[in-house]
Every structure is written in structure tokens, then in C-alpha cells.
Length: 202
Image (cartoon, one colour):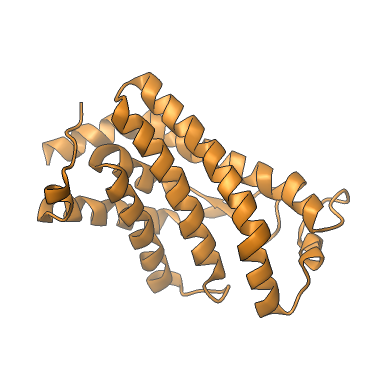
């Protein structure tokens, strides 16, 4: 069982060092990405959520959220932005929803079932938040910056069935987030205990 991180320990040197390690791991993992055949060409899958989920599970939900923010700052320092910071905003919103829900559930019930339930709920909530934020905030904002209407983004999806923005949301973006969430959750679940033991040791 992992010890709970109290408020007084949240910003301790030990806790901050571990958050920095997880954020650095996530930042590096963001460099390795691949597209999905049904997703827009500018959306790629990476495994950066593994580090933030580990942080949330081991150090607590608040630490997990802070790790998401640190991860995106590291990525900005390494790669800059190609989306006028809109992509980074989206990644932060979605990443926080994923790690917050998953780690809140797990920290209430630190068992294998608790981890599975937390990760499963995290994927579902993340997908809902991603859909709503993309529909109401992210793509409208990006469209204004790029000078494109929402329906014009459908041309970036290599599927004939996607003809407008709503098609893209249902056929492409929702499945994309489900797949990305599942892959990150799977690797986290399979490796969490080993990483947790290593963190306890050092």
C-alpha cells in the first residue's frame, strides 16, 4: 500500500523531486508518437499519460495534476508549439481529467480492482471532456487562429465517411481518445507495481 501524501507533504522536496521525475518521463514519452488511421493527421498517440498516472497513483491526485502541467511545460521547452498553444491547452485539460479521476478512485481503494475501476472511469471521463472541450473550446479557438471553419477540419481525416466537423467528432475524435486512453491505462496497469516499489526504495 502506498502512503497518502498529506497537504503538508505535497510540496516537500521528496514529493517535488518525484513529480519532476514523472514529468520528465512524460515529457520524453511525448516525443514518441504515432498516428491512427481514422484520426486527423495532426492528432497522434503518445504514452505521456503513463508518467502522470503513475504520479497520481503513487503521490496522490493533486500531485498527478501538477505533473500534467509540468509535463506540458517540459514539452514546450523541448519542442515549442505548432498550434499557438491550443494543442497544449487541450492536452492539459484532457490529461488533468484522466489522471484526476483515475487517481481519486484508486487512492480511495488501493487494490487491483480499484486501479482497474479508476483507469476505466478515467478513460470515459477523459473522452467526454475531450469531446466537449474540442467541440466548444479547442477547435473553435484553433479555427480562428488558422482562419478555418470547423467543417474544414474534416479534410484532415482520411475517411470518406467524415464530411463535416460533427462526423469528425463522432467517428474520429471520440474513438481516438478511447484508444489513446486505453493504451496508456494498459501500460500503467502492467508496470505500476514495479515503478511503485522502485519509488519506495529510493
